[in-house]
Image 1 (cartoon, rainbow, N blue to C red):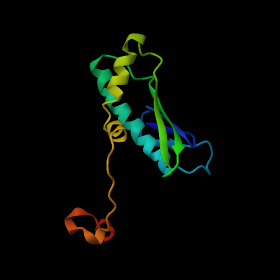
Image 2 (cartoon, helix red, strand yellow):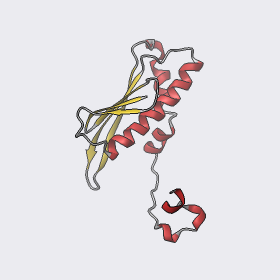
Image 3 (cartoon, helix red, strand yellow):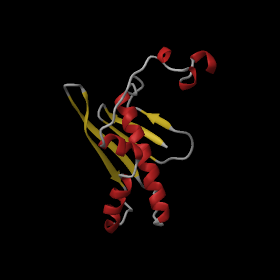
Image 4 (cartoon, rainbow, N blue to C red):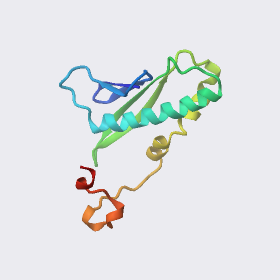
Length: 137
């Protein structure tokens, strides 16, 4: 799989053989947390689309997934996240089904339903609920 950083507010995922690669327009471009979140959404979407397409006997060889987003304030966050299925060989009569299948992605569901995020200090947790850095060394 290859993830291409298109801009500060867009990524593109393409299925490729071999290990995951992340490509940027130049060596000084950093892989931002926003691009990481979008990459997770694109990877999850690809996974469910791949499964659906396999059962529907459709090829995903030319499928690419782009994720685009904007930003909002108060608090500063990503907004208006759009997933684009760039799939030239997908028959027109299967587009609606492909869109429905893509919405089965767990990350998509997480982003479209309010969820809480809790920040906890590791020292407040029982040892079995977190990993110490020393244990992984």
